[in-house]
Length: 241
Image 1 (cartoon, rainbow, N blue to C red):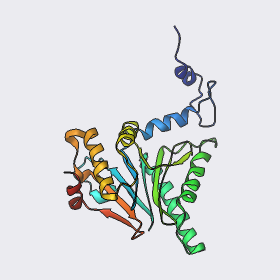
Image 2: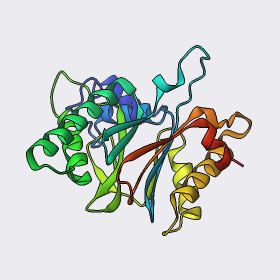
Image 3: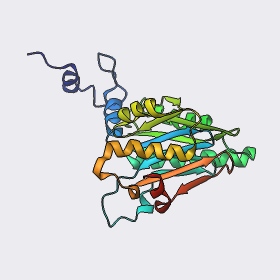
Image 4: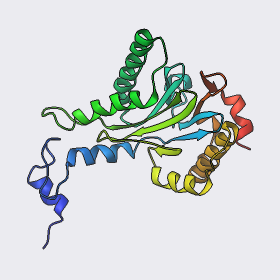
């Protein structure tokens, strides 16, 4: 009986460290971390004509949890926000590092950091943890959106430390389904209000009867105000109709 290659690799111990390639060229611990990311709750990022937007599913089920303590969108600087999917304790370390880098840039240069510089620093840290023995990869993908020179930008960094700029993207559970819907529905020149409606339209299709605006965290940065603004649950109801 032929044994699948992945099972052979596990039996031979190629998945016991993040620094050992399997014979077929895979870092199995990194691939396991990618599977962990797809178990996390989803976030959708959209670049709009008037700013950049993130719609994140908090997926909190316990009624005893204070909802504001389970936010999925983090303020990195006044013009930068981020979201993550996967192991959120890992995400906290990366977000705090991003906040520190952003503040150091503001103190040193008296200006807000460029979004690509920020995502590159985070991605370099994630990549390093695929090379060191005795450490596991970060089990989290990070999405960072904000303004660079009055232009809205959205970047995504995966488990391996690769990063790309997107017009619209998704991380977490059902990310490929969401991206397929975005490819069909997204149009350049969309406004932030239209972007929120699009995000909710996609989540309605995915969640069905489980859709509830109270489970979402929504924030955006506009070209006009250049500051992060969160949308409260009461205001979100008008976008879910």
